Image (cartoon, rainbow, N blue to C red; front, side, top):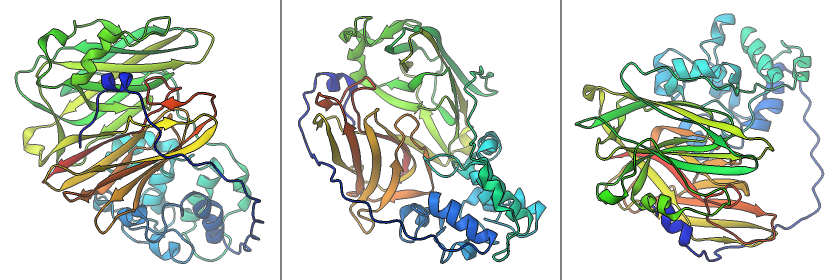
Length: 461
């Protein structure tokens, strides 16, 4: 699966692929809601039906992955005292929902997965439990969380009204802190720091910053932490390909901007992009990612690392950019599988002005070996309204495995067990854009341009 380079993208003239105009029809009348006779029915109708069943329905990839269907015909039996398919949670003695009252709250996998205000605990203490749910959507309100918590405390009954429905009146949601906190040095690993640097008012600043590596042999990454000041669009850590010309290795400790203050691209700073490949990256201001047990990402000492930060300042005042990254190293004895980067990009498209357009691109497994994909994350810009990924080929052809609606903070999907792709199978990227501008949009580096990229990790047989 070959990725094209950013340098080539800059000089590419895109062509139109697929265009479709949205049709507007008269809305159908909403069905009458069913009467609610119990707290369980209230949870089903107000929480699961509204937030969960679009993914957790029979036949979907998400239901297959988790083994959990949350439609009203089977949800209760699927939840109550059933061990989760997540191996780490099952090994810790959790069930999806327990019935032992107060002591079941902390032993219910459902509670761990939806309790967004306690997500720091989830990611720090239980990194292999996966992401907070709903994936890629808004977190549950404080009222919805309190309804679930009190229901579990009451023994999670199927009948009876055991919680006052008035708790749902609290519509507030947890919002993660935007305060920047410096990362402590890792006990065994490497810390990289970028900035602080200024981002001018009403300006997008993207830059590279070279950091040599003082290692004589390979090291293996098992955990990644990132902390960024507010306003970041993305941060990417790049490594240099073995064939990088010595003349393109940049000086250390120098900010190499993509554009000057007038907005013109500085091509000499972009030429090296042809020889870079992504190692890790994020669009989240705080990231604490653990690779699955026994899996680690190889980092060759080689020619060092290039740090890539992109800040989009849409305010009338300058802001400060800054990034801290910790790479935690694994012992070689821990490693059963070496992770590889998945980087799929379509840079050959055109989005007509004042239209909604959907484009599709299929990438095949050309390794000649079985791939085990264990993480996916999409990347697009502000005109993206939906980003879907399907399996292409084989018995699961057309199966939806990933969906995002938030271009700024796309969901990071952990696949446990991994998605297996045989040689010749692949992934199909299907992305919808709403171009409300008067210009044709093509692949570009600004957040006002567009992209269609899928990041991830896999290991091969």
